[in-house]
Amino acid sequence: MKKLFIAIIALLLFFVSATPTVYAQTQVCTGAVVTGSTDTWVWGTRYSCTADYPKMIWTGTAYEDDYGGCGTYDGWILETSYQYVCPNGTTGTSGVVTCCNTTSAGATICDGAVTGTCGSAAPPTGGGTGGDDTGGGDDTAGPYCGDLACNGTETCTTCVSDCGACTITGNVNARAVLVPSDATSCADVNSSTTYIPASFSLTPPGTTRNNAGDGSYSSWTNVPMGASGSVFYLVPSASSQYVQRLACWNRDNPAGSGTGTAASLTVDGSTLIWTVGYSLGTPWFQAEGGDVYASAILRSYVQPGASTPVVVRDGTGGYPGVVAYGTSYDFDSALTGQGNTNVSSTNWLAYAPRTTVDYYDYFYRRFGSPATPYAFADLLAVDKPTSSETPYYVVGDMTTAGDWVVGDGESVVFIVDGNVTIGGSITTTGTGFVAFIVNGDIAVDSAVGTAYNSQTPVLQGIYITSPTGTFDTGTSTAASSARFVGEGMFIAGDFLLQRDLEGYGTGNTTHAAELFIYDPQLLFTMPDPMKELPVTWQEVAP
Image (tube, rainbow, N blue to C red; front, side, top):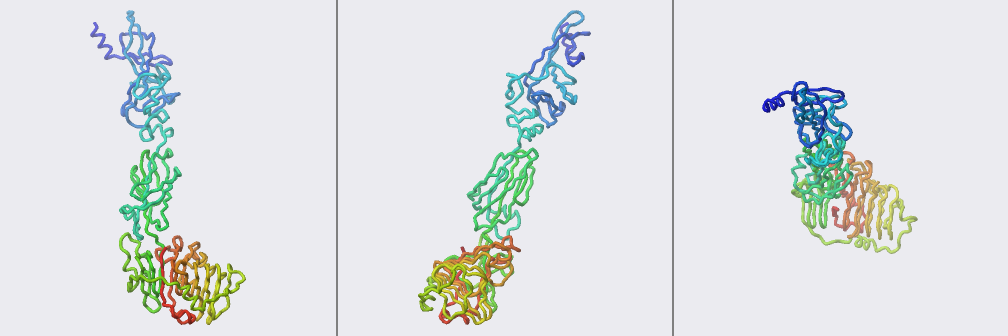
C-alpha cells in the first residue's frame, strides 16, 4: 500500500483553482480538499536560459519580466507546501511546489507550468548575500540581474536588464610617437616605436595625463559612459619642436579603428587606444642665391612637398650659395638621415668653424666711431628719415614706424647702440640702399609679412646684430602676413625663426615660413666703408 501511494504522488497532479490563489500540488487521493498552505522563501538557482524565459525578478516593489539574456538566475524563490484532507479522512502535506507572482502583463511567472498567483507577494525583508540562503531578502551583494539596481559586479554587459541603474564604463589609453614629416597613414603612425613626451586631455572625464615618452600609455580606466555609450575627445599636446601629423585610434569591442581625436565606446569594459603621430617641427626656412652659414647648428627641415625642396635654391645667376656649419646640420625631418641631398642643386655643403666677428664694432669704427646721437623726436616711432651720406647714430632702443620705401639714389644707414624693432616694411627701389647695424637684437613685428606663397620682400637691405644679438622674424598671426621674406644680407649671432604657415594656405608642406633672398646689387650700392665686408650669411636655427 505504501509503494502505491508513492507512485500516485510521482505521476499525478491535482489542480485546485481559487480566487485569488492558484496553486499546484501533487495529487494524493481522489477528491482531496486543500485546507491550508505553508510558504517558504529559499535561496537557489531555478531558472535556465532556454526553457524558463522570461525570468521573474523582484524589483523591491513588484515582480517584472527579465528578457535580459541567457544564464541561470540566483535569487530568492518562493516554495509552497499544501495541506489536504482526503474523503476517507486521511490528511497530509503535498510535495513542495515552486511558485511566484504574476506580472502586470500577466506573463508566466512560475518555474513550472503554473499560472496566476500563489503564496506570498514578496520575499522576506532583510538581505541575502550571494548564494547564502539565510537572512531573507533579495541579493544585494552579488549579481542580482534584473532588479533594476547595480549590484556587486553587475554591468550593462552582464545584465542588460539593469542598464540605466548600472553605469557602463570604458578604458582609454594614449601615447605619442615620432613619424616622418610625409607620414599620411595610420600604418606610418602605428609602426613607429620612437616615443616622445606629450600630454593628453580627455573629455569625458575632462582630465589631463602627462606621458614621459617611454612607450607607456597615459590611461583612464573605468571611465563612466552613458547607457548607449559615449564619444570621447582627446586633445594631445607636445613641445613646440614637434608638429602633430595624425591621430589614430583602435577599439577592441566592437572592433574598429579610424583617425581623428574623437571616437566612441558603446560596450561596457571596452578599450579605446590612441596613437598620435608627430613629426619634427615642420616650419622651415629657405635661402636663395647666397651663402648660408651657422657657427653652431644649422637646421631646416625641408619638406618633400616643396617645389624646390632644398635649403638654398638657385639665384638669378643660376647657382645657389654654399651652405656651411660650425658643429652639425639637419635638413630632413625624417627619423633617419640629415638630408645631405636637400642642400641645394649642387649640394655644396662645408664644415667650416669660424672665429666670431663683432660686425657692429667693426662698422662703428669704419664709420668713424660717431659720438653724438641723432635727435629723433620719438625713438619708439621713427619715420623714414631723409637720405644721408653719414649714418644715423642712435643710442637706446628704437622702433620704425610705418612702411619705408628708400628710393632710387637714396641711402639710409642706422648704427644703433640698442635694440631695433621693425614696425613696418622697409623696401628699396632702383639703387636705393638701407642698412641697420645694431649692437643688440633686431625684431620684426609679426604684422610685417606676406602671404604664404608670396616672394615679395617685406624687408630689403643689410641687417646686422652684435655677436650676442638675435634676428627675430616674428610670428605668423594672419594669412596676409604669415610668411617673412627678406632680400639682402642678414648677419646675426642667432636667428629666431618663429613663422609657421600651418593653417595658412597649404601650410608648411609646400613653402618655407621664412625666405631669405641674396641681393648682389648691395655690393655696388652700399657705402664705401662697408664694401670691404666679406659677404656671408649666418643662419642659426632656434
